[in-house]
Every structure is written in C-alpha cells, then in structure tokens.
Length: 106
Image (cartoon, rainbow, N blue to C red; front, side, top):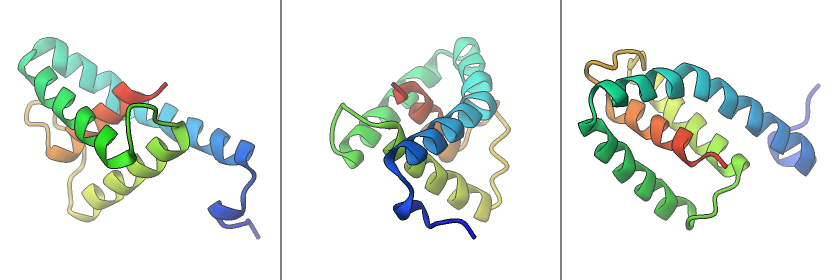
C-alpha cells in the first residue's frame, strides 16, 4: 500500500512532480509551443495565464511540486468537463493554462 502524497518524503514528492511536469511538457508543452509559433496572438493569452498562476500560487518563485499539483487539478477538471486537451486550432482555457504552467517550470 502506498503512502498518501502528504506523507511522502520531500525528495519523492519532488521526483513525482518532475515526472508529471515532464509528461505535461510532452503532451501539452510541445504541441502548444508549435501552436504559439504558428499563431503568435496566443502568446499574449499564455502570458496572461502565467501571470494569473504566479498570483494564485504566491509569487514568481514557483516550485515544481506546486506547479505539478496545480496542473493536475486543471487537467482533472478539464477531463471531467469532456475537454480532450488536444485541439490547438481552438485551444481551450485549460489548454492555455496548462501551456502557461509549462512556461513556468524552473
């Protein structure tokens, strides 16, 4: 039986967070950056999301554990709402928010 996330060591939490953020970079970050390259107007929207994330998580210095937890909550909510997080021709709020998380990963 595994321990709840809160009972994991700091090192284990950091490792899990980095793994989750690496997966996010592969599934959202890469295609999202390509979409921004093709449609530069998306960059301003992503920047606004990044600023909002910084504010909601307490400032400019964000650690991977906080970002991973935040992105997991956004992903879960998007999936519960039926958002497949795949259509970069019409990116959803959640897709832009997750791309902003990718831009904030240290």
